[in-house]
Length: 428
Image 1 (cartoon, rainbow, N blue to C red):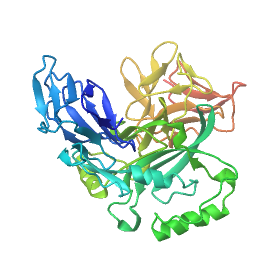
Image 2: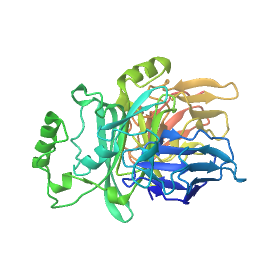
Image 3: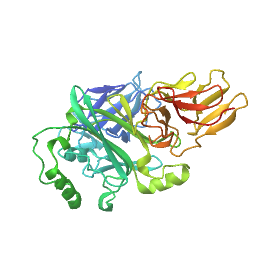
Image 4: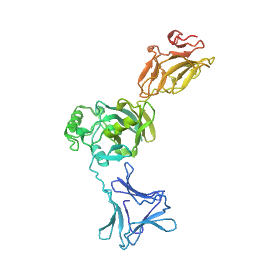
């Protein structure tokens, strides 16, 4: 509902929503009556009554919109009494207006939004852009494909099922340059998560007038040459719940987050000038923006890109094929005198205890702590947080091999027939 007629009211946590779904008025539990741009949760107007015991906002028969506490004491009013029959309307342009019976505006929140721009500007100490509601509508007619990426802005796809429907989740992360340098255009350092479906035989667009001409030509040239299997179309009808966090692989701390939004496409970027300031104030950062980890959630299912190898945790004195050591996990010799630990500085270290004497290590590796795995192919590999291999025993080609932390202080990889193929050479 987008309006309140005379004697209609909002109680705590009840809302009005504009017809286009882009605006929401809510009487919050903290007592504040707030108008939001729904997609990004951006407040556009408020009664400034937070912390007061509001119970009801009512469009009175005398034409006044009034916020009352449980005892009937007014906390805020629009001051439009004396106009019986007036009504409150939440308009599609972002303005909240009280009209009299003749259609004259008596009061307004003065919060008209420009929904024609491709992005929404967000500032929280740093400046960001998200794709706007209108831009999402326009792009809903545009299929995606894996070639829609460029140096510095990586993309991949994940095939899965949502509500029984096979879907393609396309992901992007890194530096998306603003096309032609247009400030209002999407782009910056950030990420995108899109939900798409393959629709064989669907008619492809022959023009995309809302795109800049060079980008339109790039997209149309690919649409003409790709097969139906290489194209996927936006799926807003699935009403997917999307959110993501970009994570610094060196610190495992969030860079920034986006969502939750109910949409087919969630995209957010930090503007380049803000990123330069962020870079200089936050120490150890990825050299390339595409090296951030993208942790994304679709309908409460969370995944990471890139995803680290997984497997059962190694225990005892060995690592069997497929077993892993995560941050600060260890295996130890049967006597307890020697242990192999994958440390949180991404160094794999063999210690002699109780002296805690390092006998062998791989040295700390760039890219943050990831995982150490005894692979099925016989290779012992250390991956950084970006799932890049940063050290290996180079014993692949020996499937079924396993690693043993021996009582003599030697760390050895054995083939299934008992032949040693690698050792730390640390016999004590």
